[in-house]
Amino acid sequence: FLNAELGDEMLGWLLRWTEVGDKARRRNMWSRGSWTPRTATLTSVSGAALSFRVGVAVRGRKELEHVESELPLPHAVETVDGLRDELLRLSAEPADKGSEPALAPGSSAALLRLPGATDDWSLPRDLWLNTTPYPREVREMVYSDVAAAVQAAVADPACPRRMRLLVAPPELNMEMDSYRVGSMLELVRKVSASPPRRLVASAVRSTGLLCPRLLCLVRRVAG
Image 1 (cartoon, rainbow, N blue to C red):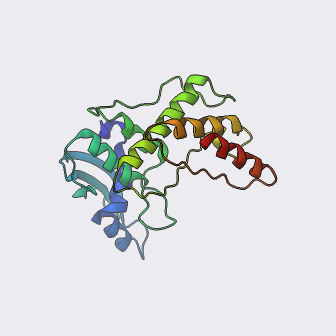
Image 2: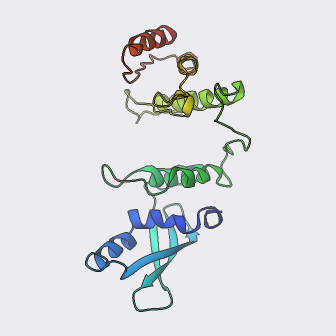
Image 3: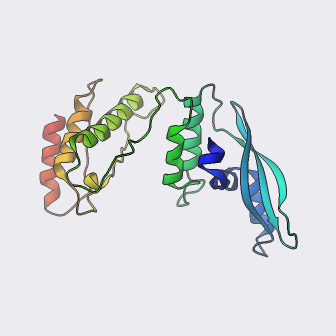
């Protein structure tokens, strides 16, 4: 599945988290293109690491040089759900502050369809976000996913008691002209009414004189 869906895009993991990236940076420091990884093929998977065969373009050679590399997972896993979560973490977490994720969001989204996951999570194929307001079933899907994520975070003893939740589809993104405050209020109501009943603090980035009214409405809904 990973070879078919991601293919050579998996190089992003290797360049970010393994010795392949370190070697490429050292070899190309003074002469760009002297040692450039081009392809990545997943050869085996275990609960602790993924093994890859990497094709490298070496200056002066017509054929690719192949090297073996192992990508360790942040935490050992025993299930497909756990493997998916660790791969998503490797994809999204920058190695350094300000750096780009290892995989583009569109590519890492394919991991949500990893075969064998118990929840079989995937976006519907007829999902369209270019209408405002969204159809009710689309809004409910977003609200339910956000509420489930908050519940899981609150139930995890390792999760900080204060957390920041970023949800920014066009209808909930204040930087876009499709922003709809009604959707924001519906989302806050859904999250605050879902068990466990905990204090929900909500903050909206300042947008001038409109912001105090929005915050007032959100506080009323959250109780």
